[in-house]
Image (cartoon, rainbow, N blue to C red; front, side, top):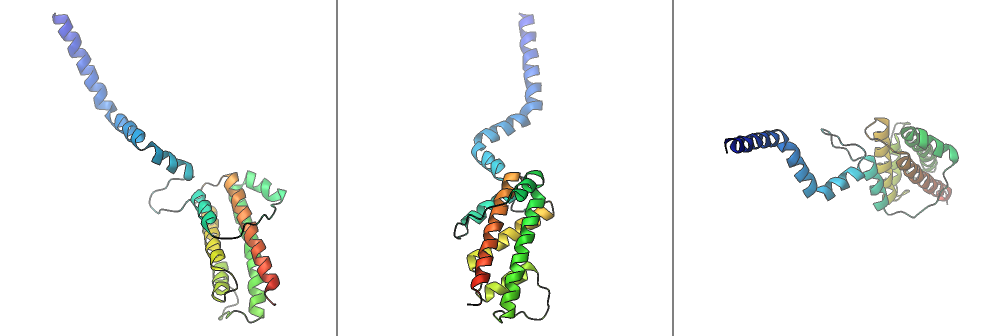
Length: 193
């Protein structure tokens, strides 16, 4: 009888010791089970979890682009851009945005030469300033202005390594920039009419 009581005491002591040191994993497991759909949704929609400065991550920005009203455009992306996106997605994002800046500068210069915008004083204008002036002059649409801001912010995330960018995400970004470039080219064609 004494042995049985000792064995029961031993198992209770061992059980309490295990519970003492494993209580936090059990609580974490319970929380995960309870909120698993929210946790899975968060983990599948972000590429980086950060604390401190809260940033909209790249995947969320891509979803935001889809919410902006714009005509669907099927500009073809060349193979060089695809290869860059596969090997260096961040570089592909920066490079594609640079092409957008060049197209934007061409449109801005033409609009300025035609007297369609008030260029204020300085000759140099940042891409954001050029876009703002084109928007104020109603040369570019509000929806495309929203899209430009999103693309610009995403480019900044890529430059400053604030987001992990997958090849797939880089390709989506390049496609959106190509569509935006096509829009600016069309606006430029019809600007003098």
